[in-house]
Image (cartoon, rainbow, N blue to C red; front, top):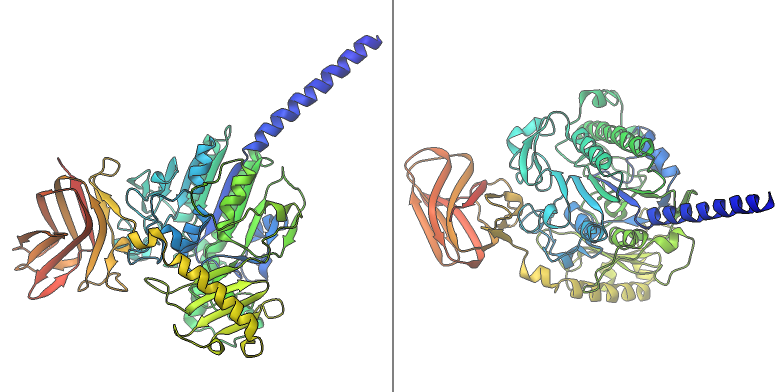
Length: 586
C-alpha cells in the first residue's frame, strides 16, 4: 500500500512538473493586444479625472493594470506611431511630418510586428497605420500578416482616396483596404475595426498573436453614431473644463460641440474595447495575454486635459503626456502606478523582453524595457532625457522644441540664436501645469539641458533615413497597380487639397511600360496639356475635354530614382492632380 501511495505521489509530482513546463512555454510567447486611439487626450477618460465622459471599461481596465502616470509620446500622430513601432525617435525612421511627404517610414525599419513574427507570432493591424500607403512601407511590408486599414492620417482626409469624397459620412459604410485591396464595409468605422480584430483573435487563439487595434477615432472629422451623441447632447463640457484650467482659457460654442462628439466617439471605443476584453476572457486566454492601452497625442480641440498645458501639436504636457496602461495577469496580478517617465519608444523593447523576441542589434534603439520598473527594480536610466519637437516639414531649431530630464523641462519657443534666458524652464515635480518659468534663476540647469538637447538634435537631424527620403517603388509585383495620394506627396509647404500648388512624389521606378490615371478634385477645362515629369524625362499630352480624369497610356520609362511630378498646364497655371493611379503593363 505504501509503495502504491508513493507511486501515485510520484505521478502527481511528474504531472505538476509537466504542467508547469506547459504553462512556462505558454508564458514564453504571450499574446499581445496593443490598443491605441487617435487624438484622445490625457483628460478624455474617467480615470484621469473627467466626470463627464463615460469610459467604464477603460477605467476598470486601468485599475487592474500597471499605470504609467508620466508617459509621453510625440505631439502628433505619425511620429508617435513610428516610435511606437520601432523603439526609435521618429526622425531616425524618416518620419518628420504627418503629410508633406514626411509620413512615410523607411522600409529598412524593423517593427514590433516583424520581431514578433520572427518569433512565431501571427500579426494583424486593424485601423490606422499612417506610416506610408505604398510598397515598401505598408503594414503588410513591415511584418503584418493581416491588415484592415484606411489610408493616410485619417478617413475623410485627402490621402484616403477611398473615403475622401464621402465627406460628412466617411466614417460610415466605408471602403477600406483589406490586405492591400479595396473592400466595402457596412457600419461605423470603430465598430468595424474592433469586430475584425476580435475575429483575428478568435482565429489565432491557439497560437501566439500580435493584434494592433489602432482606432482612427476620435480624430476629425468628428462623426459619431447618434446613439453615442445622444449621451452627451445636453452636456456642457465647459463645466468640467473650467474646474481645472490654469491657463484661464474659455471654450467656444464650437469647442463644446466638438467635445460632445469626441466624448461620444470615446464611449463607442470604450464599448468596443469591452467586447474585445470579454472575448479573450471567454476564450480562456486572458491570463497569457498582454493588453496595452494608450493614445497617440493630446486633444486636437480645446477641452478638459486635467490641467495639462496646451493640446495636440504642442511640446507642453497637454500635447505629449497620455494615459498608458499595461495588463499581463501571468506576470503580475497587482495593479500599481509607476511615476518614472516612460515613452512611446519603450513599448518595443518592453514587448521584446516579455515575449522573448530578439531586438535588432544593427541600429540604435532609443527605448528601454519597462519590465524592471514593473517588477519594482531600480534602473540606471530612470533620469534619462526625452527630446520632443513639432514643426512642419523638418524641426526648426529651438522653435516648439523641448527636452525633459530628472524632473526638469526646457522648452524652446524662440529663435535659432536665442540666449538661454529666452528659453522656458519648468520644475515638473511641483509644476506639472508648466506655468512657472524658472529659467532666470536656474541658468545652470537650463544650460545643461540645452547642451543635451543640442547633442540629440544634431544627431537626429543627420539621420540617414531623414536625408535620403523614404521612397515608393513603382512597378513592383508587390503593388500593381498603385495609387499615389496627397498625404504622401512632397513639394510646397502645407500641400493638402489645393489645386494650384506644386507637388511631387519621391519614387523608385522600375523599367517598363506604364498606364497613368490622373484624378482631379474638380473637373479641369479643355485646352491645356497634361505633363508627367520623371527626372529628365518629360511626357505631355494635349487635352480637349472638360474632365476630372486624364489617362496617359503606354509610357515607357527606364529604371530611375527621383521625383514624379505630374501637373495639368493651362493658361500658365499648373494644377496638381488629387491622386495618381499607376499600372505597369509590361
